[in-house]
Length: 399
Ligand code: PLP
Image 1: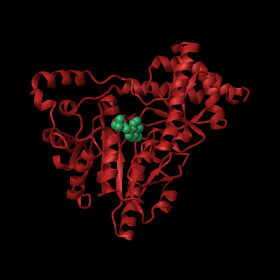
Image 2: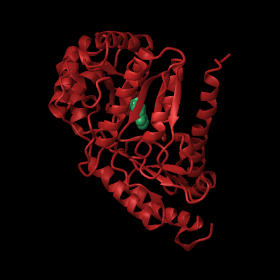
Image 3: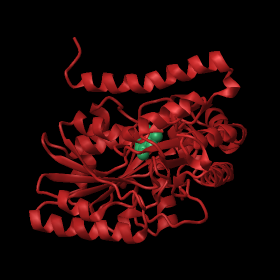
Image 4: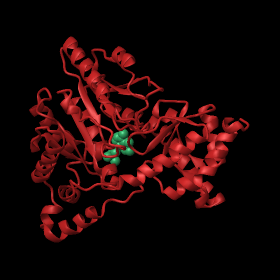
């Protein structure tokens, strides 16, 4: 019965489900408190109190038919205007409400823009390691995802390999910074170089290459690191933003796309994206959450909680001999496996530690550890990580 396109998705999905089921089984055997699940990117820092208050205030103060009703498929005008103003203030941009389309999180924002631009056979380039859903999103619209090999020393995009991939069938380049799974923030120099290459190649092929900046982790950046606002470097840029992580609201499904006037044929692209939002079945972003977001543009999650986790886990893993870049953003550590990836994941499981293999992000030889968990879980897991290190021959133990 099911479509051929769904079959590989079903197969991959079962790998994630297996991990989930395994976690449950382990919890039954060892006790939930002795299983250290670092597999999911679900924020454990609660939404700011102001968000819950805004939900109450919206329901109390605004008209019920209005707050639960349909609106323009692009979203409420006043909400989009408030977002445009806020971005202009923060980044010195010149967006108008027309440049903002409210979406059902970053996932739907990506689907909207890919549906808007892709013809069958068009290529989209992204950099390994990358968020595993990108492949499915591109294939939804019969596009082809090309993956640029990583520079595993820095995890900044490998621009030499990238340049080789920019052929005439490339319609878009998809970047994600701060990055899932590495936590790396793309430097200004990297963004400038990508922009320059895309300008050159657009000119050479006689059509624009769209740069799609997937930014659900924009606000999760540590030590004051600079996260360049990409529309300022390259005209044909679309930003895909989400409140899932920045306000800890992943289940509420709210975000937006920015399609600046500088994008070629921007009016047509915006009009098509609004229709795409409707016909992929979203119709519009959740109405109540749009009203809430307007009141919460200055709210922030407690970044210090993630930062504390980051510092403890990073310094401990380094002390045990693991090799890993200190993440500058998001809430993931991407750790080099001291032994073969599959063997390492098994050793982790043997110590009741659940991590995601790097091959799930097209980067074997690493694992992703999501530290959006309680500080207590990290503290309690450290002896297990120490034993894992010893079992892998780090700390003078036996492999
Ligand atoms: N892009 C990246 C890189 C992500 O890590 C995620 C979620 O984890 C998404 C997009 C989707 O986020 P959303 O919940 O906003 O759809």
